[in-house]
Length: 211
Image (cartoon, rainbow, N blue to C red; front, side, top):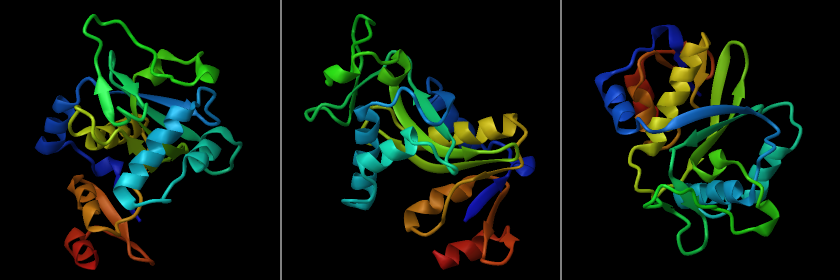
């Protein structure tokens, strides 16, 4: 498990570069159960985990269960929106973002049962299922449109979650595990510490050797 001690976190030049490149990305926080859940959210999550980690990693039904059921663990949904972007999750364009040339918002829903939807979700390009307490934010299950025209989306999402946690005067933000070579990007943040099974440590070079 890895976390950031937010009292020691400061934006690096690379962090600032990512924030500039994703300056249109907005974050809103919602309490679970999420009343605006639609099938597109579950599909986005399923497609993300399937493409990143293989078939059956995270089903759309499991995502729906986490977002709509009453639970004692996860209690927040972080919603990431790019104004004027519309996500289309039809089979032909499931991983593309399209922009209406006249600036008119198009409905992304192909399901007549979900015709009443929020403009925010039509424009959402990513989400993260999370846990929030007065002292911590646990950035648990992020997912987003992988092959969008919007670069650095995943890092932009994570940085906004870190900034939110710091602004809310939380002590820590947890960023999950460090098990795969692809997790190396998590170590770029100042204030990072990791749990060795007994104590929290700040020796990141030692952590890299274990990956």
